[in-house]
Length: 113
Length: 115
Image (cartoon, rainbow over all chains, first blue to last red; front, side, top):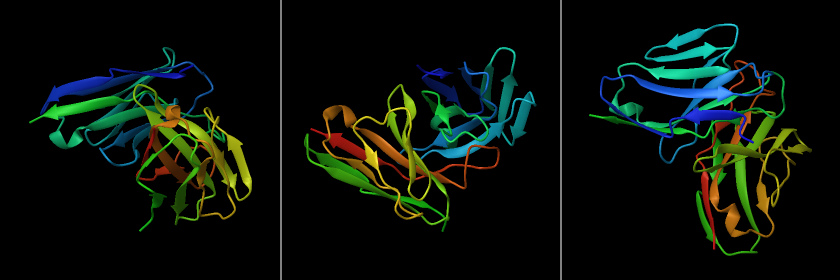
């Protein structure tokens, strides 16, 4: 079963707009929530991550919002640029787990010039 | 340059013909892992290794084998590939178990087609 559900599957945004990708999880033991960015022909790379003791984390134009009670978290990309066009994966893990990351299904973001 | 390398990057093979995808990292990481990426399913873990000679199953281990004889290398073995193993495969490595600041570094991927 998919423990981390991600939506939408694809997203098209105009340059300068806000991109929003949502994820929901089921396992309340998850305590680390990273987002990975993947460009075509490349492996995923860590973009930004959050722990559930904070409700928001911002790094430049990228912000993670976290709602522990709803078991949901989201990625907001402000002032989206064509260079942000990539596939984004949310993920979740349990600190100290050998199983590392459980990934969402991915969102293909296209930012139009 | 710190990196995870995979070979080959592209492979087309036929059902039943044994193949190995190599993975090597130069960061002295203890933890290594294999994932497969399929449309609509994200990345799913196949096998992982916490150190030399220590391996364990991930979420989708059927049809795959791994070995960890050296710290830097973690090959993925398909002894009798089948068409349902057609996928994009990623190797990843990190210092240790999951925790904040312990980022997984991914290789560039191997696209495998089994006819």
